[in-house]
Image (tube, rainbow, N blue to C red; front, side):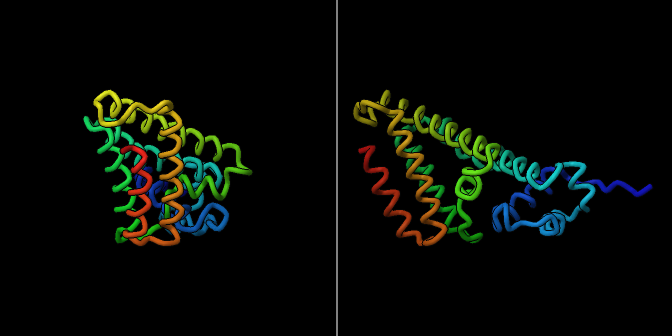
Length: 193
C-alpha cells in the first residue's frame, strides 16, 4: 500500500487558485495543477474531486481568503465615502504591484465561464451580491453621517460602484498604469461628491 502524502490543504488550494488565475479554467491542465500544487493526481482527486470541482473550490477559497478581507475592511470602517475610496485605492495598488495584473479571479471566471457554467455563474452572482451589499451598507453609513447627499437609490449607486470596480479590473489587465487607473477611480468616485 502506498504512503499517503500529507499536505496543507489551504496551501495547495492557493497554488491551484494561482494556476487557474494565471491560465484560466480551459487552458489549465491537470498536469499544470499537480506540478504547481506539488501533490500527485490521486491526492488531487481524493481531496478535491475533478478539475471542475477543484476550480469551484478555488473560487470559494478566493472569496474567503481574498475578497472577504476587502469587504470586512469596507464594512468595519467608521468612515463611509473614505472607506469606499480606500477600497478602490486598494484595488489599484494590488493591480500595479509587483505580481502584475491578473485581474480579479472572480471577474476572470465570470468572463470565461459564467455564460456556460451554472455553478461558476452562481458563485460569481453570490460574489457580486456580497460586494454590492457591502457598498450599499457603506453608502448608508456615509449618508447617515452626512458625508453623502441624499441619493434617491443607494442600491443603484452600489451597483454602479461594483460595475465600476469590475470595469477597473478589466482595464487593469490591459493597462496596469497607475495614472490611468487612478483617473478612472477619481471619475468613478466623483458621483459621491
